[in-house]
Image 1 (tube, rainbow, N blue to C red):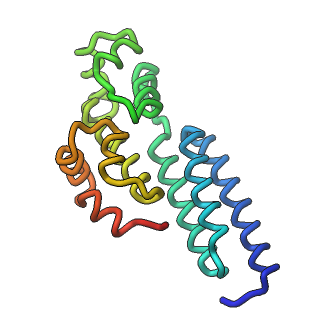
Image 2 (tube, rainbow, N blue to C red):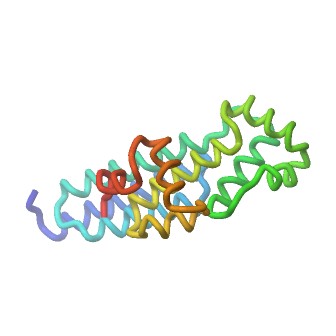
Length: 186
């Protein structure tokens, strides 16, 4: 759609305001602020590169969907304090190696008890939950950055590239490369 520069700038400003509001609401919905602002910054920077109004609408819609998905992932649904402490620790330390021993230490719970409680409340084992969270982070990095697959697997503390690919494919049905090829927006 052809438009004047003033109209394009106006639409970009409206889109930036919309993304800012959606970011604020996503933080209120439980998304860690650093994650919400990273997503917001990416979309605002991408927005500034656009030259037509139609593309702005598509990009804003995508930003809203990504932020809404994050809220869905981070909403606290009747979990005990112990499990919320675990989930928060995992979220804040997703780029570190995370063990049951660490989680039992921060919650002051016996590892076996914690493992059983986590499975009961969350519906999956701690290691499966950690893998799922790392895969979600990987999906964001594959979509929003140009880091290599090796860099991403290293950032997220996967022992080797093959294991990284195996875990990613288990939860998404795609290899990381296939996922990036189909979902990259940069």
